[in-house]
Length: 292
Picture 1: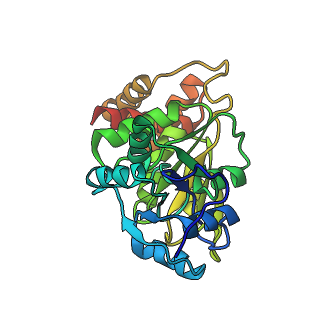
Picture 2: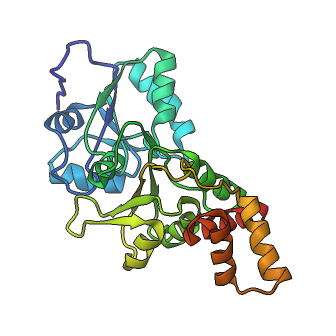
């Protein structure tokens, strides 16, 4: 079968970074379908998942498994194919390759080798969730997945909370409840939007504080995209400032030394510093996590 790309007669030996649907198979561009059909090889994160898309659109281009665990070993072979004039389409399971998915290393290697890289834009879970959140999107930071455990996870939450603009990240269904619960003290009343199964039949978008979203969250199903809204006037007011360490110390004196119950101690500290009880609770929890 002869494959000819019609955009430019000099397009041979090009890596095409192709965005694929994030759920609904209709969310793919005509250009992406043509590139996939006319390429010499499709480098796919999971050839089985990509096969569903290719079968749906009757595309019979050969595929090669290229994922995070074999990317380094695959790159020399792919560069050789590209240098010899092959047209390679890079795809991941869903969305744009390189956005919290494999692909950056191959694109970098092609750039270093002087091999043309052509983006084929399309669906993106990060941008789709950000758009439906209703939050201001300039600037917007995409963080990927949180670390699974340890001090890196705590540091990740703290770094996110210190970003005052809109931030989006991904989370797996089996970890989203834990993540929202641990994130709540860092965000206090800052609004979030949690979107799951975007573009699919059971699409769901929840808005509110992390604690409020967690209360309304049903049985987790499907990958989540979480958008954290900007921090409007959370720390930029004329109330008395209180550090996390100060809050923990005041709380500790009331509970450990004076024997006051936890809820009452939170209320006392909040009253002393002119803060909400939710703010003080979050500060105490952050200080405890930092001390672990």
